[in-house]
Structures are given as structure tokens and as C-alpha cells.
Length: 217
Length: 66
Image (cartoon, rainbow over all chains, first blue to last red; front, side, top):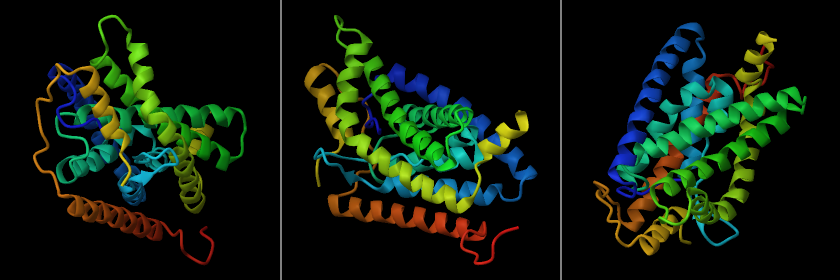
């Protein structure tokens, strides 16, 4: 899901960066507020960052012959909620942009938006929706984190299509071309990512989203 | 190493939009072997942080948490 350095037109890069900065800033404020409420927040945040670092460092060859990264956003979203994920994502992506030449500083905004804002909210809504369906916990975690990981790539394809489509064709047609690159590689990786998220969540116990939801009913 | 999907997306842009020129370059690009080392460092860092935090959260404790 890394859009390469310089591969978004300046205007797009600037707008994504502004959007990301606003949301990430409020994410930092949320984290600070949560730190005062719950002593374990710092450790959960550490686990979320560790999980995201670990999974996105794995450049895994897929059965299709190309390789890609899992996203690692499921655990943090479930442990702390989607609104803290921009902080987690921006740390991971900054590391990869500066040291690994994966992604870049000009595309940091766009990449953070797909990985750490769009993806986590997809995980959140899927998890909540499945709570209503009363699926078992591990299935909810598995489906929400797998599909959420795929959604990140869907959004990256959308960002690329928005910037790169022929005059005649729509954004949709261009989106299809980009997603067809990502999807075959990403589907098996997403399933693996979902399984790993289930293992970690099982070890860590109940999801915060579950508590939140229960207290609201 | 098989080609990554990130590179395939870049290739698609280069092939279909030859008029577009990337306007920025990575400030630092590691060599291939160094890239692998750095990816490994990221993996280990992430793993250590995850395991340490899970340990502190009591995941590996033998007695059940109350």
C-alpha cells in the first residue's frame, strides 16, 4: 500500500498530507486523554505499534508471485479504538519512508490516510456490525482485520486512480486497474494477517470495542 | 525476491502516464542487502515491543488474571 515517493501529483500529496495531519493531531490528543484514564493504555499502545511494525515489515511473497506487506492495523484498532491508529500508522510509515525507501515523505499523508485512518475505521464498523450478528469473538476479529487489511489496499487504489486516470475513462475504471494489481497478492496475506490478529487478541482478552459497545446498549 | 505490488503500481503509472514525472525522490535509499537488514531490524523491533508489552499486560502469566 505504499505509494512511492513523488508518485502523487503535488496537489494530491498536499491535500492528503493536510487531511492526515489534522486527524493525526487529534489522534495524539485522544491518546493523551486515554493515558490519564487507563494505566494500561501505554502498554496497549506499545503492543499496537509493535504489531503494526512487525507485520508491515514482513514483505511476504504471495502465491501469485509478487510480494507485499500485511497492514497490521487490526490489533491496535480492537485494543484501543480506530481514533488512536493514525499515531501508530504514522510512526510505522515514517520509519519505512526514511530508512527503507518504501513510500515517501511526500506520500506520507496519503499512505497514512489509507493505512491508519480508512483501514481502522473499516475494521471498527465491520467489528461492530458483526457484534449485532452475534458471531463468535474470534470470527469477528478474523473477518474485521482481514477485510480491513484489504480495504487499505482498496483505498490506496482509489488514491492512485484519483490522481491517474485517462481523460476518457472514469476513476472507477482506473481504480479497477490498480486494485487488480493489489488484490490477488493481498487476499492470501490478509487471511494470514487476520489469523495473527486473532491469536494476539485471544491472548490479550476482550476487545475495547466490545466493552464500548456493551456499555452503550 | 519477487516483484512487489508497490513497484507494479509504479510501473503501471510509468507505462500509462509517460508524461508524469515523479517530483521527489527518497532522501535515502538503502542497497539491497542493507534493505534486508533494515527490514529485519524493523521485524525484530516490532516483535520485541509486542512481546514486551504483552508480557507487561500479563499475557504470559501462568496464573489466570483476575
